[in-house]
Length: 201
Length: 206
Image: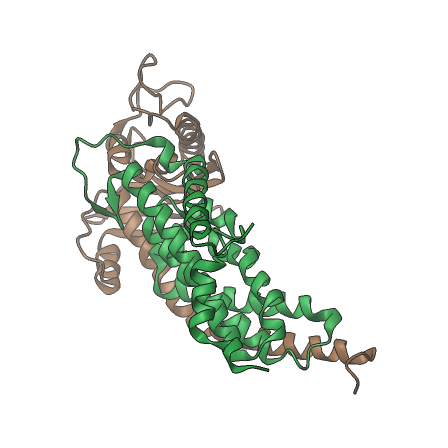
């Protein structure tokens, strides 16, 4: 068949596409399990962190063991909720928080005590903030401020207030005002939503 | 066809220095600005691009005799996309930390003009092995420029290199070095230096 004929390019493209798709599908399929395990381990590490349980290992099996010892999982409105257990009793809930950041969506988890009076901690799973500026929301220095934060005195769902505003309880990140404000907004909204949803049960 | 036309040494020098894609051809600038605030990101980005450019040039050259001229660009994009996805899958499965750090930039390797530029300018008209070398050489040229910029930016912005802290707490970090504008300044300076050296040698005759 001549290269300039009408059919040749069509057959040629179809053939190349078919081979490519087959190769990629095979590669994707053969690594899918590995990727899923990595993501699950990553999530478990983050959930253990948000409950302030020390994870000193990076071994997937040990993390899974530690996770199963302390945490139970529950599905609530299509999202995964994690429950911290201690001697068979519920000690806290971790629920997903999500909202727009400066450049893209911020995903994370917040943990709250069972009486809804204390924020146990927060952690971010995914964000696209500027590295070194807004990206510092994932640094311990920022995150540790949310450990055991009192929520009982908050009014109108304003749980997170940056200092030096009145009743401020957390420091924002210098040079990353927009990211800091986005984080406060998404935390306030989702914490409020979770508490309302739970109490309404 | 003369053999000397495909001298590997000449191809390497061309890609890395004489016709360096970033410094001389001024292509691939977008990612140069985006990922150079950190040495590790730059290195992985550079290696990814080297891999994709080399292998896609090789493949395109391999099937160039069978490719109808008027659909060649479709074929090129398809082949480039395949290799980019391979890099993406590999990073996700075996280097999850880097995959997360590079985020959307891995997928954006496909839009890097260097790959298609080499495919059109070289691979389409040359045998597979020289095409592979040409792709790799251009990739290395790109990687070196990225690293040169990243070293300065990371040192100023974080006081570290490849994540290893070099400067103590006394170092005041430069916010501007994190932001894209600093890459503009550094890239312009690099291009200026490179042109000066090459002009002095008389390689660029005006």
